[in-house]
Amino acid sequence: MPGWRTYFPIVQQRVRARAFRALFLFVTSRCNSLCRTCFYFDKLNSRDDLTFDQIRRVAETAPPFEKLWLSGGEPFLRDELAEIVALFARHNGIRNVNLPTNGLLPERTFCAVDRMLELAPDVSIDLNFSLDGLANTHDAIRGVPNNFRRTMATIEEAEKRYKGVRRLRRNVLTVITSENYREIVELGMRLAGEAKIDGQYFETMRGNAPDSSLKQITREQVADLHRRLMPFHEHYATKLFAHLPAGVRQFARMYYLGNLRLHFDLHESCFDRPSKWPMPCTAGETTIVIDHNGRFRSCEMRETVGDLAAFGYDVARALDSEAMRAEVEAIATANCWCTHSCFIQESSKFAPRVQLFSIPWAWMRHRWRRLPDIPATELERFRTLEVS
Image 1: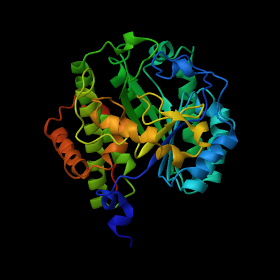
Image 2: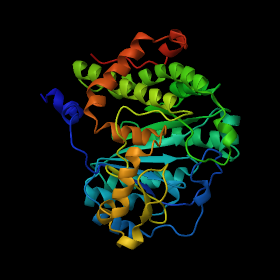
Image 3: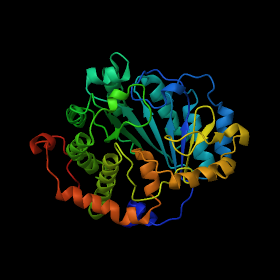
Image 4: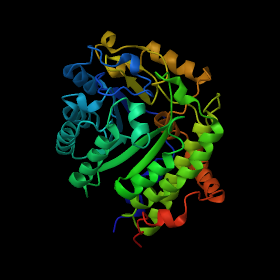
């Protein structure tokens, strides 16, 4: 029988040197939404998207890495989306791809996902549907009539098509705003009961969005909401690790919940003022962001560092460039602060103290102060029984 390390290899990776691990690629600027929360809104629907051959060159020149974060625009408006994922699987050995979507293009979505599963058989996929409130609120934030209804229909169809496909996780991502924070718990209850998704994750707004009024929420309100959202993470954690042996399952669940609680802690401490992370930010060193037009950055929240065209679309050269080295040095002293979970996650993986102490401590604090604001009888009907 395989040992516990086979089931939970993360334990073997707690202490490791910094190395390039993740690429953030805006596969298109095209978008079919008018989101008031979008920090990329001033670059959307341009006519200078990278060509497939240019993206091929990116894959051929990038070092091996584990995680591909795709973005846009709406990624499923990119015609060769599955083939792009296959490029990075073949050339760079990626193990996971993160795919956000507004859920408005079911036919394109399912065609691309089916093709990805075929072309990249060793890659797991996180398909993340955006839902920012109940029907009227979500539609108002996203600027598309009937968006909520259409996205829910896509989520339901995805459950039918991919039920039992464990390397495809179907999640919902919700951005906390001044217009939706009072109904996010209700949204979570509905999704836990009806959607049969694998997880729901919560972000605060970041960057310069078209409607700054959506940021008019206090840190105290965010913290109170986070406390009420942790039971949902517990619910999905039980489902996520149900296939593991009992001892490993408990450890995996603890670690997962501690990691998410740490993210919430940093969202709160950095919500409206600079606050030092418990680890150095490794943007530009372990990650690179490539915009739809080939310009590159260390982080989605920082300015352009250079243009890949000047490096022949050679990512290794861009990472090793004088401009990127200067950017990495600047980040160390810039006092830049953000609530960007992707970069919190990527940076924390190279901080042994965070992995071995901060995350377990976050879980312990969560357990000590756990005050269930959702009646147990309500969550109980959504609970997945653990397999002993």
